[in-house]
Image (spheres, rainbow, N blue to C red):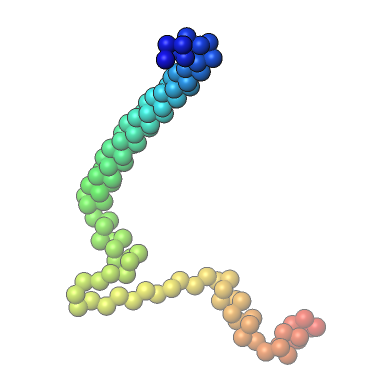
Length: 113
């Protein structure tokens, strides 16, 4: 057993294995520190977002726009109330619809005369 431990090839092999083990440990340590830093950054970002949402909720509640958004965007209603949404029409659309409503003979008359 002592002859194997004194052999130079065995010593070189053990040295190479320890160097590889050391490099692996340092890389694992670097990964864990960067992961810890990323977790801390994400936690601070989530805390900032939570405070921002709380501020926005307070602002909406104070301004009374919550009901307006609920009624206009989601078409929600109170009990016993009817909601009718009237679409707006553009002038360009009405002219196009009027031109499409004309017969082909009328279109030819406009083109020729």
